[in-house]
Structure formats: structure tokens, C-alpha cells
Amino acid sequence: MLVAIRELPSLDLLRGFEAAARQLSFTKAGEELYLTQSAISRQVQGLEEQLGVKLFHRRTRSLFLTEEGQRYYKAVRAALDSLRTATAAVRTTGAASALTVSTTVTFASLWLVPRLATFQSVQPRVQVRLVAENRLQDLDREGIDVAVRYCPPAIAGRGATKLFGERVLPVASPKLAARLKIARPEDLARAVLLEYDGVPHTVWLTWPVWFETMKVPMPTPAGTAQFTQYHQIIQAAVAGQGVALGRVPLLQDLLRTKQLVALFGRARTTAAESRAYYVVVHARAAARPEAQAFVAWLQASVLAERAR
Image (cartoon, rainbow, N blue to C red; front, side, top):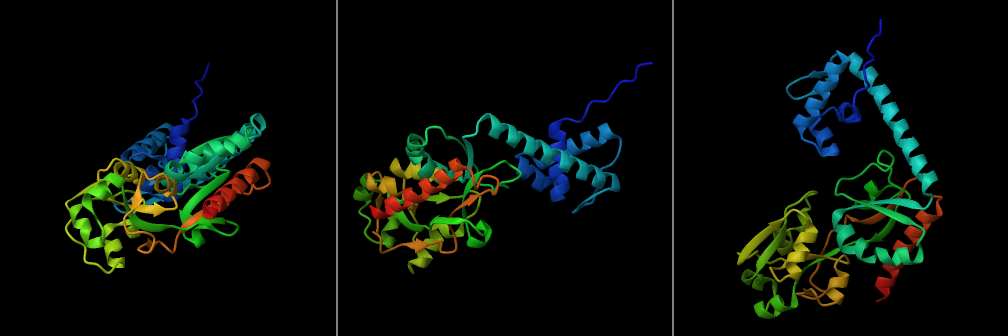
């Protein structure tokens, strides 16, 4: 008599279970995998039905692995780690010059992407795969070779290379600045203020904090507009839709080409002193020529801009 062999659970179910077991939270697992909490819950439930055992003890405000769940988690995590390692090894063998770079959406869109063609012109054999996400990624787990992170030094870790910090100052299109005749912070009452309302939440990148730093009461503006991505704010500012809090040197090119102007010059700035942009290189990529070339190019680009 032939006995049907059960298929292995799908990779999606295993990834959902592994993330939930590691985080002990369906919500956090969903955030990691860009799924809803209910989607992760359904994945785990489907896996439990396939296996015929309960993997979690569910409580109102907590989640615990059962004994079977603990054993299965160890096996699944080892299997997924092995798959990631094997996949990275195959990619390296098939394309020795491939380099996976991770950074934030803001840094990628405003600073890195406009300059990337320069790196590719001097290193044409290096294929850069850019992963732009605001979530802090695990370099080992997600196959990242080089990461540019905007964070405090403690999070950047030992061995990280600092690129630059930031200054924050109001910016607008030249036409809007000329029309509104803004000469001092109080004059921003005549402007539409463009506000960042995204993740991660950056308190220092808000108008109330900027006015507090300037020691000026915040006036009621002519209007406000909120955006969940910082580069969208800058696009709106360039289009003359309002005044933005500009992050320098990310906006250096736009200021140099007069697409944006600083309303109060260099003297009136406020800084996020506890954070900076750091380059972090995974241990497996540290000795690779393409990773070293990319980091050296980043540093040279920053020095060249400072010289200007």
C-alpha cells in the first residue's frame, strides 16, 4: 500500500513562525516581515494545523512557546540560517563582484543614489544591490554586506566608520522665499510648514522643537502639510509648496544648485548631536575588495564635499 508523504510546510509559514518565536510577538513578527499581526497569526495557525500540534501558548498580553514549539523553533531557525548561508555563498560564487548595501530611504534618495553613478564609473565590475528601508536591518540574517546607518554611536557599534552628522535649518524654493520675504523665524507665520510624520519618529525634526531651539514662540502658520517620507517633504519644498526643515549635508546638492535656499543662513541651525551617519561592514565582507572600494568611495565623496 502506498502512503502519501506530507509535503514540507511552505517557506512563508516557516519564516512567519520563526519570526514570531524569536520575537515572542505576532505584532513584532509582522512588522519585521511587513505583514499584519493577523496574517502572522493565521500563518502560525496554519502551520499548527499541518503539524497537528500547538506551537504557542496564547495569553491576552503574552505569547509563549510550547515544548514542541521550542524544539521546532530550534530546528527551523537552524534550517533557515543554513539556507541563508548557502544562498549567500552561491551568490558570491556566481557574482563575486556583487555588493549588497543597506541604508535608510532618506539617505538613499537624497544622497547615495544621486552619487552612485560616480562609484559605478570607477568600479564598473561591482554590481551594487541597494536595499533602502528605515527598519534597522540585521546584516547577518538579511545578507547585507555594507550598511549606512543613521544612529547613535552605540548602535553603530565598534569598527563603524563615521561619515558625517547633520544640521537642520529651514529651506524653501527660491521663488517661495522671495515671495514670502521671510527674514526671521517669526515670519514663518506667512508660510505653509511641511511636517514629517513618519517612522522612525524623529522629535528633533519637528517645527515645535526647532522654534524651541531658536528660543522663539512658534507662530500659527498659514497652513501645514504632513508626509510619511522625508524625501517627499523635500520634493514638495522644491516645488514651492511650503517650507521644510532641511537636513544638511543631505540637501547640499539642492542648495548648491539653488533648487532650495536656506532661509536664515548657516548661523541659525540646530543639530541632532547624538546621531550621525555610520558605515558598518559585515565581517564576511570586510576583506572583499569591492566592499573596501565602496567604503573608501563613500569617505572620499564626503571629504570632497567638505573641500567645496
